[in-house]
Length: 237
Image 1 (cartoon, rainbow, N blue to C red):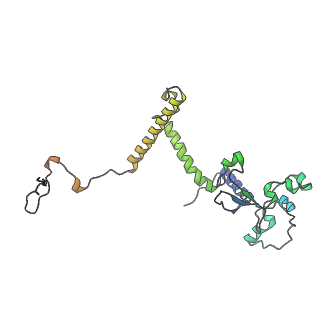
Image 2 (image 1 turned 60 degrees about the horizontal axis):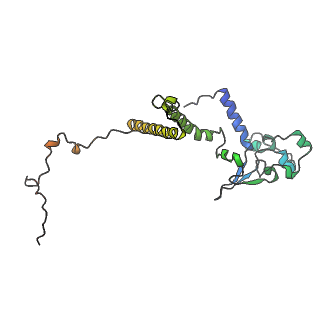
Image 3 (image 1 turned 45 degrees about the vertical axis):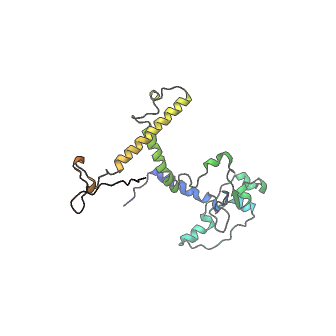
């Protein structure tokens, strides 16, 4: 089955998302029991994904020597320094490099340790999947669709939580209790709808069907007579 071509805006967004991947910090060590992780600079290591003049100046890396590249080999072409994106730095810093102690933390050492809470107020924005990446879209789009569906149901004609007429009581406590009851009614309606649309009706077994309760007779023994009634033993004193 052929995939539909993406619109121009989506194609441009896809290119921008792919172009930012080489600049991401790479995971050097997964989280330990305390949640600490090790991240590596994309310009460090034996196979860097970007070329960074700041990294080369801070760590005194000599410029690469001229080498012969086989242009017919994609792997050899992509591994060459000229094929990798370059991290832009201010022109003034190119002329006068900053001291090493004034550089960002990731520029002073090839790897850094990130602990829970190191990012301060923006730590809550950390996520395992990169924003707008295909993996991010696969994870968040279904959840977002479910949230919008629940919002539409809550604002529907049956129970409209946005209508002031549905929330006449005054006071924060009364409003909170009423809102909880309305949400509970929405959840019950969701469960009832799901049960009616997905659950098959229960059909009793043929042997359990009783057309007339008055015509039911207990099973008989081998002699054609009903079984004897149970007796109760009485102790004589």
